Image (cartoon, rainbow, N blue to C red; front, side, top):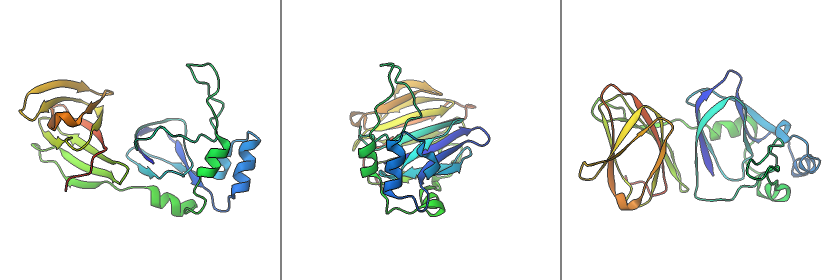
Amino acid sequence: TEMWVILAAEKGAGLYLGLKPGVTKEQLHSTLIQGLDPTELLNFVPVEMGDVFFIPAGTWHGIGAGILMAEQQETSESTARGYDWGRINPETGKPREIHIEWSVAATHFDAPRGAELIAALRRTPQIVHPGNGTTARHEILADESEFSYDRVAFSGGDVFASDATQGLHGITVTKGALTILNAQGENEGSVITGQSFIVAPGMGAYSLAAKSGTPSEVYIGRSDPRCR
């Protein structure tokens, strides 16, 4: 299970999400066995900056060209890859491994199809705090059993406080620059656009602070139960 947030997209760019109505297990298997492109069997979804999609395990998904996105996943190294556009693994110089039987077996054929599926996968952010110049804007993008995912936007000079005691927080900076503060308010380091870091449970309470006049944005993936 994972989710995608579109950070930037070229005109006409899109994702492949789920099976089209009427596609059968036999049809999918036959397409893969023949080495044919299965995207003709999938829904193509045009995307724009800011779109958010939650993708349960068992849902076919692929990323089209011209997209920059943030991705959050559950804690799992299992990937059933049914097709890979002939891409080469740069470490081995060979095509990446394809798992035809596994990917077909893992597919949820009884899931919704077409427009019904896309509507179910598309998420609307839930505003926790609108931001007021002192406290950063905080949105929940997903709050699931596998993980939760938050977006925090700083206008500059504001702060976001959190606590990783019950499970690590993985944080990616997509705009600006931030300072990490521990529970005592001490500076633990700085991060800039494009960098990611982990706040381990041993850190406990922490805060992120944006410099005055520096609009910033981060995405926070949480493995801990959300404290309400």
